[in-house]
Image 1 (cartoon, rainbow, N blue to C red):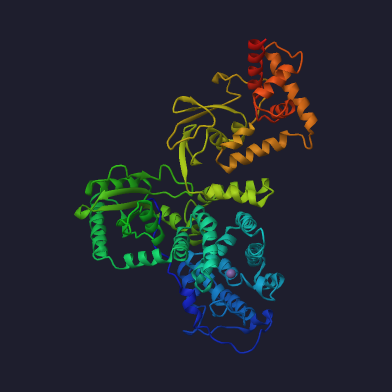
Image 2: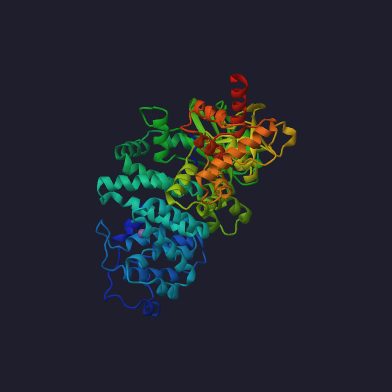
Amino acid sequence: MEEVSQVDVDAGRGAALGGALPTQPGELPLARRLRSLLTWPTTDNDPVAHLVRTHRGIHANADASVLRRAYTIADNMHRGQFRKSGEPYITHPLAVAEICAELGMDTTTLVAALLHDTVEDTRYTLQALAEDFGPEVAHLVDGVTKFDKAFYGKAAEAETVRKMIVAAGKDVRVLIIKLADRLHNMRTLGVRSAASRERIARKTQEVLVPLCDRLGIQTLKRELDDVVLLHLEPDEHARLARFVHDRPGWDGYLDDVVARARVALRRSRVDAEVAPRPRHLYSIWKDTVAGDHTAPYDLPRIVIVVDGPATDCYAALGAVHGLWRPVPGRFKDFIASPKNNLYRSLHTSVRGPQDRTVEVLIRTDEMHRSAEYGVAAHYRFPRAAGRAADRADELAWLRRVLDWEQETVDPTQFMESLRCDLAEAQIQVVADGRQVVLPAGASPVDLAYELGTERGDHCLAARINGRLAPLSSELEEGDVVEIFTESDAESGFEADAAPRGPRREWLGFVKSPHAQMQINRWFAEHTEPGISIADKVRLGRATIGLALRKHDRGLASDLPLLRLSEELGYPDLETMLVAVFDRTVEPDTVVRQLIDLVDHRQ
Ligand code: MN
């Protein structure tokens, strides 16, 4: 229900422009010569006109000549190449640049978008590109090209995404060009076979959409969502499009709601803009399916953007709740507790005019911008206040992913971690007096690692809502959790003389890739490389010996150990000793059972 969102980016302009391309005489003059040769006539036929207008509309002082130069080179290099639809190839990079322009990206990004396929698909070299457009553009094009190279290989998916993340960590513009590239390819998938449409749509849905979500670029995500739905559920897409297109009285009703809300806000002296906030098709479809509705399920929705500080949002909320009765249980404060992608807003539902339920989103101007454009907001609104701090926060997730990347050798494993981290289901718990976001089903161990590597490595026990609970417990939304570690002397949990470190069995229940990675890292660091089974057996035996000595006991023979290994279901004694060394079984547990066995059977 909390889909953040809803003004659709104007679709399909690029494709429309494709038909109006001028034909140019002559074949492929040298790139270098082009620069001096070309001035573009400003006619209706100018294929770059729309791009320049969109770009200038957001960045008034942008340099249009470099866009024309890039277009001319791309056009010449791709001359004679066609898309599967039969259109000249240049329509594609032009459309990608237009998507980037609509997002408000800078001129450098647009130039790179125009040229993004030249190095891969034409004889234009990266070196020539660097000479013509400078190292920054070359770097961006190179980043995009590298994804594509990996994309068609065997280990395709995992490797591609890994490269995307690495590149994005260095320069997020590479990722934005790639997302725009995918969006345009998805829009024009219609000419492909049904099987390949489905394959590409699924990949987009699994990885790119969540990635887009994490980067907070909702305008792009909504479009990707809808185009994925179009390819995966064409009939449903058509049904919803029809439903949204002709529902009688809908617009009039929303206008009435907006007008009344404006009056109430003015009376409460809250300076704000109010607008209808339609859901995108995918969002309606999701709610329809989730609620098992036969007819498409969609509630009227408005957004209130206050012109003031965050406290004005609560004043606006008061005004709305004073006007219409709130629906119980529907208020959500994503300002006090932002989502993982830093989305902030107040959400409420009220009984509006004619007793119909109306959803209301309330946010500041700055919250609105970052909800719509996410990391792209920094390019769209370069002068916006608080920029540096926000940006650090937004990229924190990306940085963490990059850390795993460095620690994971196997791209498939990295991919698995990423998929898990991108999964939508999340819970928030309270620890150390703050909110912590974890994947659904997370355990206290996940939380401990989230609080810090040391806390994770040495956690011993947890208290959930005041009660002691096993480390393998599943945490739930809103739980208040305390983590005890070996160094918490006052915790009453007796610690071994030597720090114990993580248990291997934790890997069986931790949910976050971060915790998994840290546990694996610990074992990689604490296991001697190439240690032999014989050594493990010896060290396992020594570990038990040490633990026994704490109880003032010792072993005269292997017999009790042998019996215990049978009793515990190990194939032989050696296997149990290796398990003790590997910590898949606790030495203390073995020793306790050993003492029981000896004391009661002999
Ligand atoms: Mn492309």
